Image (cartoon, rainbow, N blue to C red):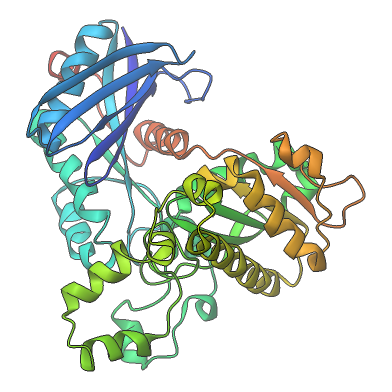
Length: 410
């Protein structure tokens, strides 16, 4: 019987999952399966595929399925489908680790309590990350669970890079810039030597994680120097439904002059803004790029403009830029966005190869370009699996992976 590591990324209405071998260091080539349970709270669509993308399951669960119900269905399916594998750990993507957690951690009651305290800093994600942890604890109480944080990668930033110009007493209470999308940036940093070469990998690199959530990260020597997101995942670039950078005075005005409550402002900034708010049409970049509506064009224009502004900020933090990397859904698949960003970044030395960009090549800059531009798919699941496997096998956290085998088969 072989060991297996389960990776979970839980959202408000979905649980994305993947299963990697646990008897060796996980790799994308060795993945056992991956899939998603979509529509939690309603009629959940449960799908999974194997490493060759062949469908393994495509079915609907009962109406009103909860996170716990969906996880239970997933675990039952794994037990039947993979009789020769046993789960030895579960790794979770957890958006916010606060100031305390600078590396993955084995979850216990004290960790869970601290993560609940951080819910107000990541209200779109943290409650659902915790829901998956709680559900799995009930279903398999002896299964080691490991939290991997989107904030951890940015703890290498200097104090001046993370500080707000607020009274020191507030900084002492943890009000500072944290940064997010760290698991994605950590993965990109880990593969830079293989793609850019060892020398260039340790240079001045800006990674553009452009998806429904979007941010930039300035990386030197494969460590985070600066990033566009701050105290919460609202800051920086406009996103699918989040506003990005905004004058705090706007929020004061909405509350004092328009009479909006904190809950109403929260909903406005997290759910009604970004690409969706500006366009009034959609939060999907594909839809906006295909639309002739002037509001759709304005939303795209604002998105590209803000990337250009923040790219200059990241270059300033690094003292220059040697490479620009695009990743995540929009970054990996929207050639038009890459084209516009690179053309706006010509002043930084980016000389785009139009044909390579249109073809979705890995290197999309011309050979003579002073600043190279790359497209590198991210893999947060693999990063979580690697962290879970490492922690599981480390002397610092000796976990009995053979205990209670019968209750932890998958």
